[in-house]
Image (cartoon, rainbow, N blue to C red; front, side, top):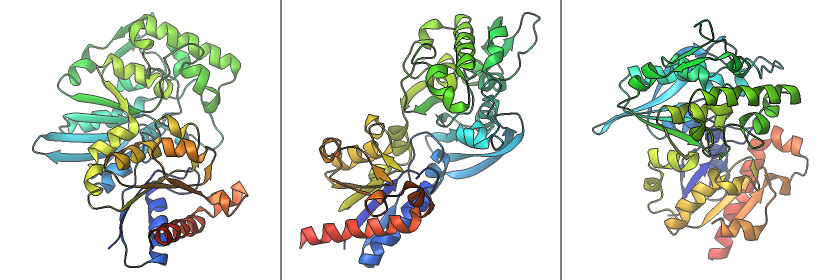
Length: 375
């Protein structure tokens, strides 16, 4: 019997990773109902990270926290208790991510990561010994100050009062006391799952590169960059220059202050979900995401899956909304063939709207091609 492992990320704006995997599985079975299809939705630290852990067997926990603008939101985290200890997976996106902002109401100067710290606190209270934090999709550029405050740090102005929320308020900080936050995490293995290597400040920093995506205009970008630089001057300038310190609006820097280890998002998720176990006996691995492009080649989900497949000696194919890199580049990255929705529907808007049925058709074409080559 043919065994195929489907390990895809979300198709942003269309399908969650779980839904995309289910559609691909349906397309494969439409060609051969007898094949064994194992779906393993994956993520690289952004939205869907917690879902991927839950799909892999983690328990789901829910907590009410402050969203990016302070309004309450329901955030989930994943928890797995084993003999070796308790591992929890938290994602920034479901507590203070961009998608949680009120419709059309960007708040680049005041959005906060406080909710992330609150979810982390809930995981710690539940006995977490290893805390994996996915940081994609942030709405804020607050240097992780909100997260730090929620974990007990004191970030104070000249009058000794806590500064307000958001990156804009960091310019008012005069004292940073991390004693309580560090004590709370002293016996915890803290890992940050991210896929960016930006420093905290400068032309490649959090404000300059990602601020505009969060609604910041050029003047606000300058203010945020200066505020982050000031914040770092009261903490650790060396850590601020580390690759990844600029992740999630500077949350990477805050995590480094707490002793976190920064890791590849997809590699971390594949490890904690025991992805290699699902590859045993597989004849083919199918990966993919909404856009398979140059950014994908820099360590996004498909590359992590492709590397795992290649290491196991299993062919890897990809299905994506669109593919903008060459077959040679994909082959060098470990992907043997790629199938794009735009191959059969050139209109991108239609691809986004009808991603499900189009994905089934491309998966069917993929399997048909594979079976014809093996006859």
